[in-house]
Image (cartoon, rainbow, N blue to C red):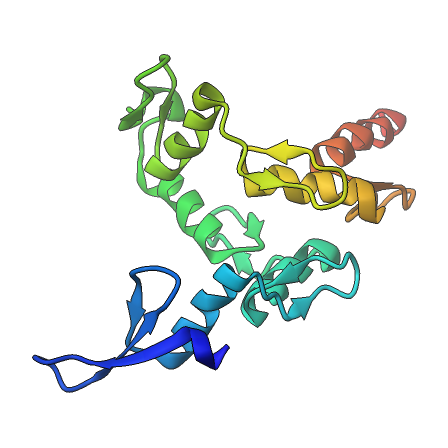
Length: 192
């Protein structure tokens, strides 16, 4: 790892910069360059004990494990909805601060290819892959390719046998949360 990190002295500022030898990026913090270089050399030292997914950072592993445990530490005060990631809570909270109904809010990021619009530029970027056909996430088990990280994570469960969504009524497990929600209708119909 050390041989791919180069130190260079900035002339105007007296702090050390760590330059990546694989690309043009530089970092002022040594740990940040170490994390960054792992992307280039595909080193993922943090592995999930339940599904064998591997991560560049320990923090990403801890966040991932919440899928298995069902832990949702970020709770919305107004409505009580809970989330596995803080960024999802922040996004959700915008719904409470904007008083207009969802249907009347103008979504600022519009697709130039079709009429779809999005609240966030990152969502538009992901959507554009529908038009370009770009599938940059490849499964290392069966060679299938996917347009986004979420889809390949979901796909990998086929290979690992992981079923992280469990019914609290009967214990049946599912690959996707949507499948669990669909299944729960069986139990709600039984009670009516």
